[in-house]
Length: 516
Image 1 (cartoon, rainbow, N blue to C red):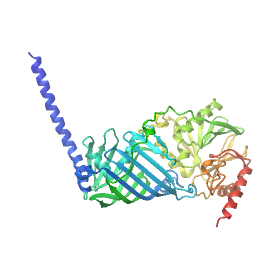
Image 2 (image 1 turned 60 degrees about the vertical axis):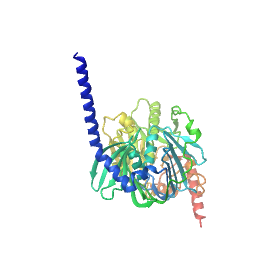
Image 3 (image 1 turned 90 degrees about the horizontal axis):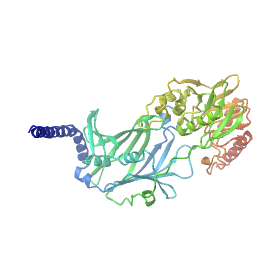
Image 4 (image 1 turned 45 degrees about the vertical axis):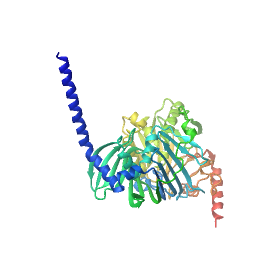
């Protein structure tokens, strides 16, 4: 007799607790829901927003290649501008499909090509794909691809507010910051973004989300909405500015917006829907060529490194990316298994030349040699957390502190068996932290991004042999330092005799002199 009443009481407590919990959740969500409701009303009303089937956005502006500017400071890291000649975003809101197209032309002569670089990216439910210039679609299987592309689809006030109005969305953490009210919006299956609205107009001002930022690890991304105009009774922004962490990433002006019009077929192509997940990538190949006693040229992909043997340790020149750096270090240990690799020479600050610095430190590098203008930048990327996408250093922290050797104009790294002469590249339009790496005993010079012998990525109408546009500046620096060179072992391209470089400078000079 005691069990039934006891069970009844428990059930009653459960019911009361459930009601109390539900009421608590409602009270907690009420301010968050109010932020969304206010945003919807300011845009044109909940019913009108939810009735919209398609959205087309077109414009132009500027884009910035993060990490590729001339300087490693805030302005330099967000430089290397591109003119966006075609910006198009198409949304099928009822089918949960979007396609993002962009065409851009570099405003930097080094990257400029004869035609605009185009990209087409799409998402259809949980299928993410890219379409190449040939029209062939390829499914993207990267771990964060779906979340990243969903964020792309939500970087518009109409799409984020519409998603927040969905009863399946979770709204939390309503708060006020300055002149804005904010709420965190989690869509079903993720991701979570923060929606901010103006406290006075109630119009959405920006969306913010946390992601893994190249080089910098955990960082905030932001897209800000400006200059609203009415389109068929709905308020829509005509300017978007974006930031990656603290760096400006894009500034786009919208020229045309259409609601409920024809956006084409945004469904994933058939080959994307039927694609199967590929297996793991093959091991990274590292080709070894000894270019002097105790100096090895480690090639095999677009970015090369050099391994240098000193009496009691090894030094690596260049750490391009995490995967490449780990492969190169493994090869170094095969070549000299009884000597620790403790030192890294970094040629300059660009992301494709520093992406492996943290990996090198995770494998025991305790000394980094670089031009003095890059030291603060390197220190920052080493101390930044990488919890969203843990990298080699996050997975395998280095217990020893890292020391830095600053190179001003020139510096010699040497012991009784080896010497590396480092020279600051003067008057470089590409990167003002660039170093020339010279091995006097072997009479070998290595440079980064100044000379690209037989590197097909640099071939264009102005540069038919694949020689970069900075070779004249490189020649001036070589003559200024009075270097005696037999071979060029560049970070890009291939090993060539110095006479080949001299020939290239003559060809480039002739081509430039013939220009109108």
